[in-house]
Length: 472
Image 1 (spheres, rainbow, N blue to C red):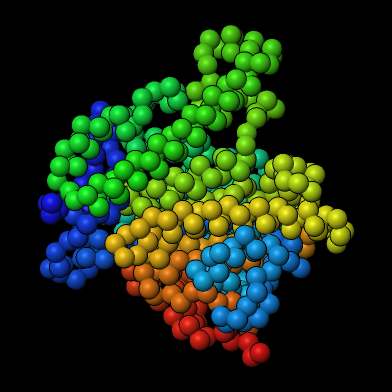
Image 2: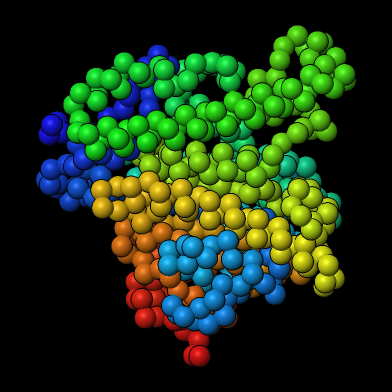
């Protein structure tokens, strides 16, 4: 049966639910009638942009690959990316000039996607200097999708004053800024993020994991759609449903497990009795009583971002692995004992440096998980990773020295064929990190002449033979 043409923006609807659909054969659109149209309407898969931020820097001795150009070997920390080596660019010797001012971590975070200098303050008058790259892109293409952008994390931002540096910690919890004075709020609850994607038409709807699946709500609409599409599209639709169902079950399982832990604790049970209700959201459990699988928590967010990209629910997303100066305890990793921030101040102690590297490698494992998810989602003859640009990095290199030079930066995804991946590029020291931002902005359709301290996009993004500006 031949497909009956349907719109790329068609959704499955049910009571309180609206689910975007992945790209299917029946959505192959007619040629665009005018320039400047949405790429998905113009017959191309849409481009997506994701930025992922790692707090507290990296072990500088185990980050940089050996070799340059296509002939390179990943350093130990990046070994989890080995099967994705052909899909990444590792960029060496970049620096964010406007993050050099001020001591400590916080001056390096907000500028990660703005390329500007923050205003020193201990109060509410925060100012990062500019709108961040992700929000500039969202302002340009956000009208094409149900959500202009998606901001996620697994650690809520702090709001106290760090007296060591005389600065509000708010700067350490945000990389996305809608205006120079407005950080974009991040969702740290996987259930609420899921509801935002699939239940956004039902304000106030409960999030009890026992509630019916969103797939039940759209069942009738889905059956009608199946009659209009080909066998290949029906198989793709089932694959999409399986992915959504898997995320739902994992969220429900995690919530149920934490409720069980809670009910087994007398103090928590008394607290529940006093409040007269069960815990319904991810972070209702008191801080000291939480039992959270941190890896699963992160991967739920990765899956939500991947689904959002695949279904064109949004084309812009940011994710923070944690707030800067995060004291997250990583003892769940074999060979690690202690908090992230404390370990990052290794003082060149060999044992701590090894623990530091293990935490960094864990971050790379999660990044690799996200990239593999994008690569698994097919779009015609391509896939979502090919049609994306992902930026992963940190605002400092070495957490012990708070070093803002030669920061860790990885690009992944081919930007719809506009980026030649599979290389390690070595640039002159202190090459503008914002050259990367400008290159991304151009590929996402923004006609910018400058960004931060950059007036040109990073050299060599499109040339597969380019090795960098440093002579071997």
